[in-house]
Structures are given as structure tokens and as C-alpha cells.
Length: 428
Image (cartoon, rainbow, N blue to C red; front, side, top):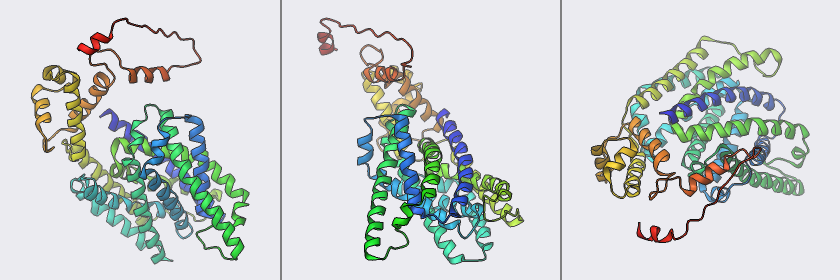
């Protein structure tokens, strides 16, 4: 439960930052930058900032080998560029509202590909979201077909983007926020660098042959110092903060729930855009029309219903999550040398529940979400960080604590060698 609340808190912080940078995107769209180059440059600056902050990490290479890393990078640039293109035709508030069609795409994806029935549990909220999207679409007067096409493309790319975060196992192995920064930084930098070099090669070829497609920047775009200044600002401050909040929140509450929480973004964006319009930061003045307010309210209500329905159902629905809990329980029994009583006490559950989970080979046993959280918390506190023979902290826990020491202060470290300890290890 603590982990879930932390995920909700990070998601709310993401809502505020999303809204602020939506207004920033609106100002950027007015400069007629090449949007793909803008996002690749922002990712480079953001990745470099996170690597410099987090430092080196052994998780960098595994991150680079993961297919989800490259899916993440591609869809990130794609969704941001599509969003920026939409801002040339509609307001930031309308664009963010339409982007929440990705909630529906993500719910469907989670059901069919990940086995999570959030869609079924929150089905009552789906009509509200559909109605809200329909109201926004009916309010668009020009380029309706093109805007709908961009909205669908944005929803799909956004959903794949969030799933790539959730499914990237390397992100779960980071032990500190500095390691998180490093892993995310390497992921961003690698994908952005490849895109940047491809754009540079494409621009060079285009300059030689005399033709450059719209999606490829020209050499003149690379000389646009304003583009690099605005991209650097967004990269160093927006990319770093938002990507971190996304990674950690999605890991804790899953993709579809995160997307439901950030459904608050349109309303907050509307307020920010309304405040920014008189300052000339946005092209359109925001009129708080009744249909726009209703659309916001409907999408928010639908999203809240989905979230509430998801967490009022106390049993875990995802078979993968049940399997993870079962593996934790089995690992605990191995740690405790098949002493079920000690295992149950260590995990904070009853002896009968422990035995039921161990014997549930088909993962059909109903396990409450709160019980699963108790099992995970106790496992990480009492089992994964301890030595099974002595009960003392193990090497991994020791190294974790060692790395967290403030090196600005004086510390003492004792190394004790125990003679003839090997026979004890061999025996026990």
C-alpha cells in the first residue's frame, strides 16, 4: 500500500509538470522548429543531465540490450513530435484531452497482452471517457480528419511508450534514485544519439541530392540556435523530471492506472493555458466553454471510476503478479530451510496461507493486494537482505548501505577475518 501511495504521489507531480510543459510546447510550436530534431536534441540533453547526476552504473549495459529500451526511445520521440504537430491546429487543452484516448488503448493492451483485467473492472468508466473525447472532437472546426488521425496515432504511440517503461526489467533493479537516473539517462542518450545521427546523415544526403522529406531536418535546422536553446532547457529540466516520475510511478501502479491519474492533466493544462494566453505564450485564447468543461469532467470521472474500481477489488487479478508473490514465498521457505512456521512469521502471514500459496501451482489462489504488499515488504526487509545461516545482513545489503554513506563525513570500516569458518559453511 505504501508503494501504491508513492506511485500516486509521483503521478500527481507528473500531472503538474505535464501541464506546465504543455504550455511550453505551445510556445515552441510557434517557432516552427523541426519537431523531430527538437525532441531528439531534448532527449540528448536530458539523458546527459541524468547520467552526470547519477554517475556510472553496472545496469547501463543490460539497459542497452533490452528491446524495450529502443521501443521506449522511438515511441517517446514519436509521441512528442505528434503532440507538437497537433498544437499547430488545436489548443494545448484540446490536444491533451484527445491524447487521453490512450487510456482506452492501454486498457485494451493490458487486458489482451498482460492479462490484467483493469478494463473489465473499470468498464463503467469507459463510456464517460468516450463521451468526453466525442465532445472535444465535435468542437474542432478545421482539419478535423487530420486531427483525428494524429489523435489516434498519438494514443497508440503513447500506450506503447508507457508499456515499454513497465516491461523494462532493468528499471526495477535500480536500488537508489541515482541508479534510476543513470539507467534512464543511458536509455534516453542511446536512443536520442542514434536518431540525432540519422537526422544528420539524412540532412546531409538531402542537401547533396537537393531534396529532403518533411520528417527529416535540413542542414539549416541544425544551425537554428533557438532550437537548441529551447530543446536544452526542456531536456535538462522537463525530460529529466518527467521521465523519472513516469518510470517510478508506472513501476508502482502500472501503465493504465498511471494514465488514468494523469487524466487530470487537461484540466490543469486548461488553467495554465488560460493564465498564459494574456502573456502571449499561447497562440489561442482559452475560452472556458461549457462543452470543454463537460469534456474535462467526463474524462476525469471515467478515469477516477477505473482507478477506484481497480483498487476496491482487493484480489490480485494479474497472474504474473500472483506468480511473483508465489516465487517470493517459495524463496522464503528455501531461505528458512523448509521451516514453514518460521517462513510464515518472517512474511507476516498465516501458516495456512503460506502453504496454500506454495501449493497453488496454477496461480488461481485469490490473494489480496494488501496481503501481497505485506509479503513483499517483509521479504525485502527480512529475507532478501539477510544471510540464511547467520541472520546477519548479506553482501548485497552491505554494499547498498556502503554506497549510501555520505562520503563528506568521516567513517570507519572494520574488516574481520574468521579463521576456520569454511567448515561451518561446508556443514551448514
